[in-house]
Length: 459
Image 1 (tube, rainbow, N blue to C red):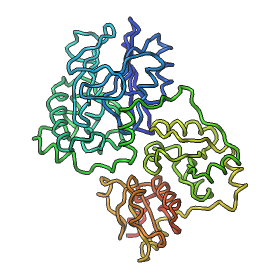
Image 2 (image 1 turned 120 degrees about the horizontal axis):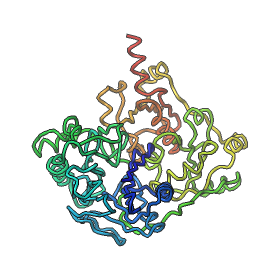
Image 3 (image 1 turned 90 degrees about the vertical axis):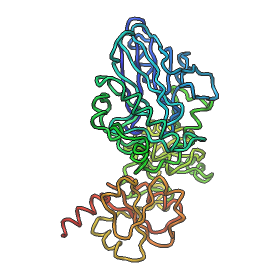
């Protein structure tokens, strides 16, 4: 058997290639939109991709099923409850797919979404204990898929939660302890609240250590799973809808052009947004007014989907050599309006010095003074589950995922201090508010962690 996990740190997303070395037939599960790596690996190993399985309609990224099907002619499979706008192979609960000796068996595991399935992987069709189970967003390492996302229009969180209870407690936990668990996401994903950094586990380990897999009633399960979920990024509903549609197919070799200074000026004058993907310290030292800073080396795609909208034309300013990677990350969430990248960022900023500004970033000591000023608006942009550590005095909670929609709760004419856990998200949020016309915006260097250490040192 050939079994490969592909993991994207920027989306905490896992996809899989499962193949039979004897027959050369293979299936890809939950592919991302840039499908070149699957094609290259299959070619290098003498495999033919005959099928593509999506465990559900993903909300956090655009699946690459259409791209991969165009390149390979493979069928596209979903669970029986799925009804997309393109031709699919409907996969029934218990159905087996033979790749040779290697066999896949479908398990209906609804709850995160109604159409969710898991895929058992057997090295031989008569194996009593499967090699593993690809659980999609039903079961994670340390968590389960949240049932409250807007991906499932027409179903309430309670209805889906009860489905999830049955899928996890009665179906997945009925598998032998030795079965390996391969989820679709890891730590950092907004599809759950307690995901592990581990990329595989076993049913036995989850039975012992996963809070949602402990024996409990259905009502107890609903209560424990629903609490403390992070705010869902605004683009999730857009992606879930896009994944059901016969959307535009992205070319395997797609790239964005380098733009001259004149082209950049015209694009910005015509309403394009400048996305500055440089490090937040470089951004703070000098950036074009109105630019939004989402550094390329973090959770760029998810964060872009939080602070921008898919219909906005975008010009990228990125570190040298990272321009195409940044554009690819936009494409992974269906943000396809990237016009190009600034050919010479440093030269552009030097030539437009009158439009360059610096960003205010305060140390913990400086923030103490801001907190003491009654006029300062202190905003905690962490997720709900992070607040248990404490908050700055007088702070209000507006998660970064909600800041764009809730910015009208803040007075643009009064000073604003934003903070997160470590300083990455706060730079993003501060740049967003400045782009919206807020005049005096600072963020806390080192985030709440730095503030807490300073307070402990002073006590």
